[in-house]
Image (cartoon, rainbow over all chains, first blue to last red):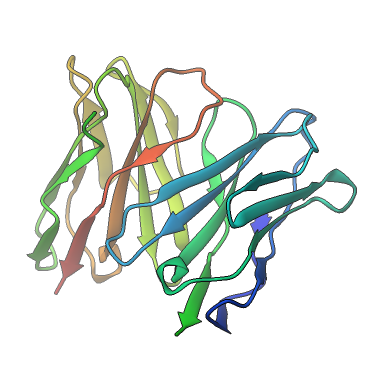
Length: 113
Length: 114
């Protein structure tokens, strides 16, 4: 079974629209960590945010915000007023402590000018 | 601070050959992980090394192997290449193990097997 599910394979929005990328995870551990990465065409995964399971406080960083809800095992990512530079593949990942990361299949976001 | 550096960036091999990919982690990072990324399977964990020891291994056949040197640089090797090994191979580093910190990724080595 997939530990991280990103149901949205591709999303297209017009510039300046808001967009939310969904992430649902599955774990039996009480301590775990969730991450979002951005992968531009160059290939490198760029770290965006890390959240531990004990911190459900939502976070905002500029146009980016993250909504962590343990009750629904979700860690959604919203981009406000999207820009063309936001076009990339976004990955949600889960780490159950010190071991490997489990990545979702990614959501390809295209922002149309 | 230099990021994670992977070489070569692109390579083409034929079935049956072997390939070695190299990764230099961020200075001070002692853990190196390798991931395979394909359109069909997404990002899959290969292995993680720390202090020249393999700490974790994913579900890949023995044709996939790796090692880490005393300067934390790592190499991965794929022997007897198959068409299905065509992928982007990503290396990532973090400071230490155990660690709950984020991984820092290189730009990857794109392998095409013909």
